[in-house]
Image (tube, rainbow, N blue to C red; front, side, top):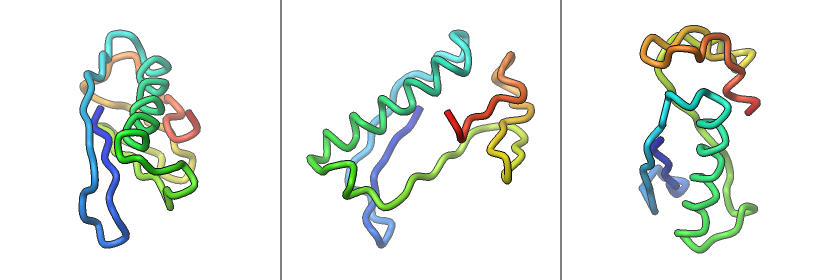
Amino acid sequence: IKTGIVDSLGRPLTWLSIPTDTQNGPESAAKRMGESVHAAIKQLGVSKSDIGGVGLGSPGTHDIPTGVLIKPNNFRGWENFPIRDR
């Protein structure tokens, strides 16, 4: 899981990386993604209200309108996971 915060021009301000631990399943990873966002915000020393938006990238086929990760080839057991909503 890679998390970063950029400014309005796309310049990196801070970033961190933690293991995905895919074997623990998508719910665990989604929780850890959220925790990593909060950690990056804290690391930068800003508040959540200073964040203008969030982007998400992950491997595999997605249904973009619904936010569902359909079939990530390298994340077995994550099929049809509603990653955006988590």
